[in-house]
Length: 265
Image 1: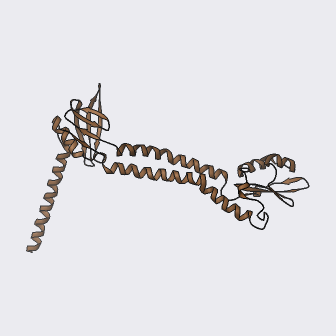
Image 2: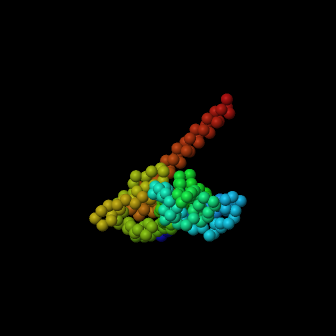
Image 3: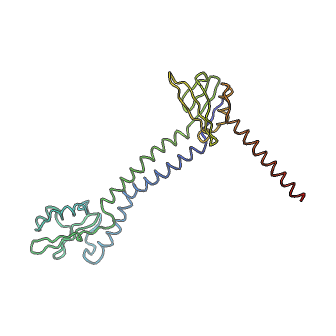
């Protein structure tokens, strides 16, 4: 006696669905962090940089650096620089100057600071974000990681489910690489109509339980029948199927009898 069963579709498809959802969301967040949000910043920035006032197309987005950011500007606000020299120590040289206004521009936005008579006046409203702050962009990678972790776990489970093989031969069963001899099988019991039954077997000095599930293995009924035949176990799966078939036959017979009575009336 020898036969082999591959995986059932149900378990494999469930893990596939979970994997696609989690890794798909992770990819979406990673894409926004790596490209999507940067493109939105470029589009918003170029609209303002190319407007007649105040920049008039004299500043190019590709020439802008990574600093300052909204976060660094907020730190500058806490430092409260009062002079133009102190302001430049924190933010560097202005990217663009128009009258008394100094602009410190980056790929994330700009700070507009009015400097009169060498004194700088700052407020929280002086910062303008193009579309997304650096912090918002960085957070996309955190979210991507958050979804990628379960996604990779689901992928591992998907691979296991899709590659599951169960072999029955004259000496016993190999389930997903685990070898269980007929001589070590103790009992096959606790069948659930939902489609699983537990195989109790010896493993060294201990007794372990392996759940056979019709959502995981394709030839579930055949595997159970082969074990029961080899060990003389009671086949609860077959008994339940026969009982269910009898009940359905009885219900059908009653329905047919009631139908005949209605016709006679």
